[in-house]
Image (cartoon, rainbow over all chains, first blue to last red):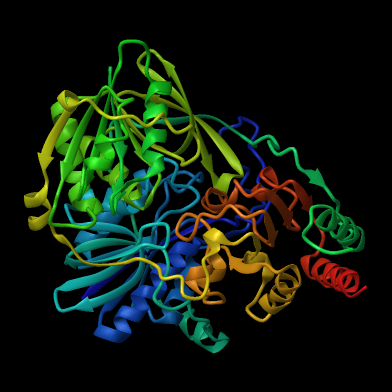
Length: 254
Length: 322
C-alpha cells in the first residue's frame, strides 16, 4: 500500500493575529507556523498503518517551514518527503491545493490519501472531499481509528454526540483524520539529525480547475460580543473574586 | 431562486441544526424564493414531522442502513441538485457536512464558503461572514451564485417544527445507492455512560490545551473534587489521551449545559463553544486575552491557571472546613 499524507503549515493558533493594511489577509511576517494539528494525527495514522500492515509513506508538505516538518515526518517513519510549491504567500486554500494533491496522488500511484479533517485556513472548503471527488475516490472525514484489511480499509468516524460509525471502504480512498488511533509520537534528536540528511523532493503547483470561487472582501477581528466581566491577571485577586462569586451563586460554602 | 437546505438525522431523531438550515435559507432568500429541504437517512418520519416550514421536502430513505454515510448522502444530494437546479445549497457544518459540501463543490465547480455565520443577499451574489483561525478572525466574502455554503451550528435560530404536508414530500428510495456504495457501514457505537454522563452534570471543570501535560490534569481534578464537579476536556486534551472520550466536550464530544462551567486553558474554538456556550455560568481562565472562550464567558481571567487553581482550591477548602 502506498499512502500520501498531506502536511499543512498554518499560523500558530495561540499566537496573536494581525491584519494586513489592505484588510484582506493576516500579517504573516512575524507569525510562527506550525503543523496543522489534524495533519499531525494524519501523519501518525499513516505511520501506524505502515507498522501494522506494511506501507510506503510519502509525506507532502506545504507552507512556511515545510522542510523542517518533512524531516520530522521522515524521523517518525515516512519514506519519502516532498515540498509542494505554494502559490502566493497567503492562506493555504484547500480548494486551490486540491489539484496539486490529486496530481501527486496519481503520479505517486497512491492507494490512500490521508490528511487532517480540516485546517483553520480552509475557508473555501476542506481538502478531503475536494481531493476525493476530483479523484472519484470514496472519502470519509473525521476518522478516529483506521485499519487496513487487504484491499479495504476499516474506518471509524466520529459523528458527534459521541456516536461513532465504522465503515469498510474499498481502496483507493481519501480519509480526513481527526484523531490518530494513538497519540502522535515524539522523536528523538538523534533521529531528527539522521532524518535531516534525507533529500526533499519538490512538486509544482497544479490548478484544480475551478472557474468561479468566492473571494475575501475583508477580514476583521470579532468584536468582544461577550458581556462578561474581566477579573484581570493577578491570580490572588482572581481567586478571591472567584471564591466569592462561587459562594454567592451557591457553588461553594463560605 | 430555489434554495436547497440539507438536513440530517438518525435513530429516529432529526438533528436540531436541520431546522437552523431552514432559517438560514430564509435569510438568504427573497420573497418568491423556494426553500427545498433535503433529507437522507434511515427513517424520513422525523423530517416529515418537523420540516413543514420549508416549501417542499425531498426525503431519501434507506431502510437497510442505520446511518447514511457521507458518500451515498453526497450522491443523493447531487441527484437532487441536478434535478432542482438551485441557486444556493446550504449544508450544516457537521461530520457529514464536512464531506458533503466539498464533494458537491468539486462535482459542480460551484464556489463554497465554510464556517458561515451570516448571509446577506445582493441580487445574484451573496455577501457572507465566515469564521477562520478558530474563530479569531471573521472573513467577509463575496460569493457568486450558484454556490454552496456550510453553515455553523448555532448561527441561525431553529425554525418552528411542524408537519410537512404529504403532498409536498417527494420520497426517494436510497437503499440501492447505499448498498452499492464504496463506503459500507459495518457498525455504529453509541456511547455508554457507565461512569460519567456530562450531559446531565450540573458542574463541570473543563481543561484545554493550556493545561500543558497529563500530570497537570490532577491539579484541575483536585479543584473539580472540591467543587463537586465532573472533570472534562477539550478535543486536544482527549486526543492526547489525557482524558477518556466520554469526558470530551464539543462538536465531536458531548453538548453540555451545566449550571457551572469552569474552563481552564481552553481557547474556545467554535467546535468547543458549540458544546458548552449555553451553560448557565461560564468562568474562563486563559493567558491569551483574545481567546474566543472570553466571548461566551460570564467571568474571565488572564492569569496563570496553576497559580489560580492552587489559590482558589485553598480558599474553597478553607471556607468549607470553617
